[in-house]
Image (cartoon, rainbow, N blue to C red; front, side, top):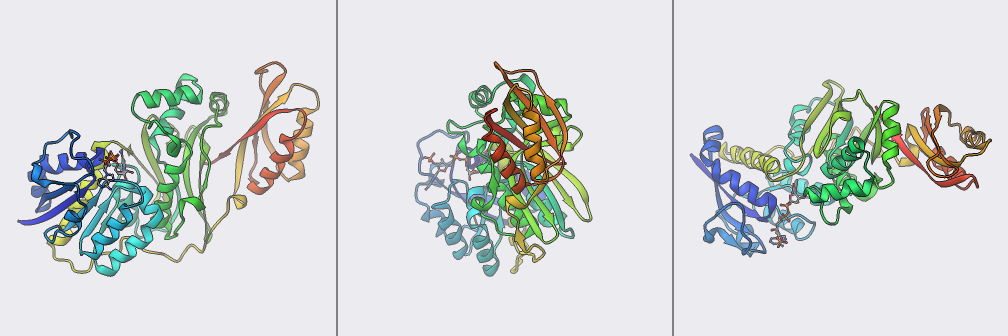
Length: 430
Ligand SMILES: NC(=O)c1ccc[n+]([C@@H]2O[C@H](COP(=O)([O-])OP(=O)(O)OC[C@H]3O[C@@H](n4cnc5c(N)ncnc54)[C@H](OP(=O)(O)O)[C@@H]3O)[C@@H](O)[C@H]2O)c1
């Protein structure tokens, strides 16, 4: 049986999960794949911390070069995270003739194209299944399963922490801060949760999905990203009364030869498949011109599901090597069917808006007058009970409107003397 040697850099949560799975399932994987996967080196800065798996001391090293320049290693697996030195490791591993596997979304959203192009030039593989949706096999599905399709739409709930917080707010009527504290106490949110709640982590993943599904390179800084800290429990309650759920969605939507990419809290109809995706679960909804609607659902993080995805990449590459393929498939086909990325100002959508206004005759007329000036028509309006003294929430659903017009209208409305707080705008999909 062909033996494939693997070197792992990063022996943290996922690194230890991968080592554990490869060690415990070596025979099982060999029986299934016909290849024997052998760990020859594990590198980490910290060799003192006890890991959930025991390994012979001789495998461990602090020196990255012991992995990159070991001629016996076929596959380098980067599980340390961050941009540097992860990018140098990726490029150097490839230049040294090694196939490369990573779970690092920050790295791929920043430098994916450069890494994929170098790998292709050198006839090497890059596996990155774990970089989006943890254990959900969305990368392989888009790359291989949907190869015949033009992808029209991707909606992703790709951040478990923010989904958990929104679920807690919806189910228990909690405020954002209390729901975040529960997520932290359960280990679902970091001490510094900013990347999750700001939508930044979802933007990294959307950038990878955009490259894969649409062949367009969009760095996270060029993706419109809005976090969820302005959402209040009452928004979830009002949305619910109208038959909607609120989810933090990563959206890639084709219109003709242009593509919308955006991350923001979104109202989705209660009957949409994504509205029932709760807690820390992830789901990715993909619509293709041949396959129609598809939903992928599963655990988007954690040592076990993520290491399942990393191991699947290692096995797939090991099989390619054992077949003696000298020319490997492209990691990503840079298609030419998208010409440009739309700016957020250009999108057209429906809106939920919550105004906090003084309870006084004529307020609604003022608001609707400004909306009408910008061609925005109201589909539905409800004036709620006073929340605090004299301040009343007014909830509006609009028909489709241009984002640019909505921004201008809200800017005018928010400075009216009757408005007590900045309005809350949530876009509607589905
Ligand atoms: N955790 C998840 O559920 C999950 C899910 C999907 C994808 N991922 C991705 O998987 C990757 C690893 O995440 P993780 O949660 O396993 O992180 P982690 O627990 O922090 O593990 C990373 C390990 O790499 C080590 N390391 C950092 N820089 C190093 C260097 N220059 N040389 C050698 N070792 C170094 C760290 O050591 P120190 O601790 O001493 O810094 C740590 O032991 C990240 O790209 C992450 O985005 C994680």
